Amino acid sequence: MSERMTALVTGANKGIGYEIAAGLGRLGWRVGVGARDDGRRAAAVERLQADGIDAFGVPLDVTSDDSVAAAARLLEDREGRLDALVNNAGITGGMPQDPTTVDVDVVRRVLETNVIGVLRVTNAVLPMLRRSAHPRIVAMSSGVGSLTRQSASDDPLSVGPVAVAYSPSKTMLNAVVVQYAKELAGTGVLVNAACPGYVATDLNGHRGVRTPEQGAAVAIRLATLPDDGPSGGYFEDAGPIPW
Ligand SMILES: NC(=O)c1ccc[n+]([C@@H]2O[C@H](COP(=O)([O-])OP(=O)(O)OC[C@H]3O[C@@H](n4cnc5c(N)ncnc54)[C@H](OP(=O)(O)O)[C@@H]3O)[C@@H](O)[C@H]2O)c1
Image (cartoon, rainbow, N blue to C red; front, side, top):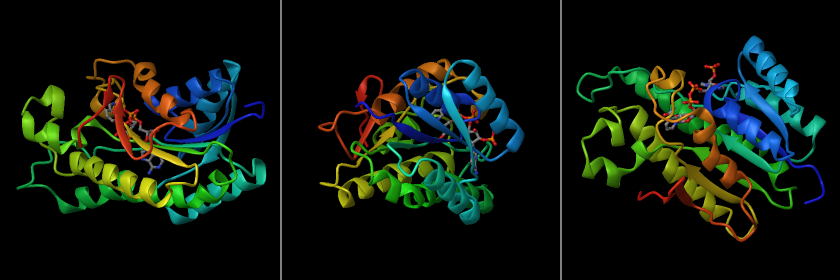
């Protein structure tokens, strides 16, 4: 791969997304830092550039059609091609989320970000991914989206708390990944879901036990898969996760 590879990482201003951008940057990639807040995006780009990374800012709110369309135009004008999209932006919607008492607006909001946002961004940049010789799409899922694991355990450390918005949003995200992989089979676009493990970030009040850099590794691996790599899979560092 002699040409410079370009990635877009959503929610890259902090946490795992920032470290995915940094990790791809260290591999020599140019990285679009997708972030909705101007100040947080500029600070992240500045920090990455100070570390020698070829980063640029992409204003991006994954819940907004207009914002996503503008981000796609920016990438089209600036790069014209995209080699990897890492759909990392996500929210929990806040806890508790017991099914019997949940505010359904919370469920709607979480699905809008964690699932519809991924569809919106992916479809907006897909024409640019199709111009890549090695296009890759990664969806940042979670092990809490595994119905097999949810059915086998009540241990919050392995399947999170009871959460009727967040966990099912990742289950649906996994299902969306499978559908993309089926439609895009044979096109060279490889689409996979990743679980970063339990990572200390703002998302969980820094209760996670892994570093954001450790959490980023699986997404970086899936964004840089060889052409004969898997598609339609669900992976953590240790290997495939049962659906
Ligand atoms: N931490 C864990 O243990 C863990 C475990 C499994 C999966 N994950 C997944 O990993 C991903 C990253 O999480 P994290 O732990 O790094 O959380 P985080 O530190 O809270 O970062 C989340 C990122 O998503 C962005 N974001 C949220 N809504 C957005 C929107 N509408 N448009 C654009 N960006 C938006 C946030 O931007 P703002 O700064 O503007 O809010 C932030 O950059 C998420 O998908 C999460 O579900 C995390």
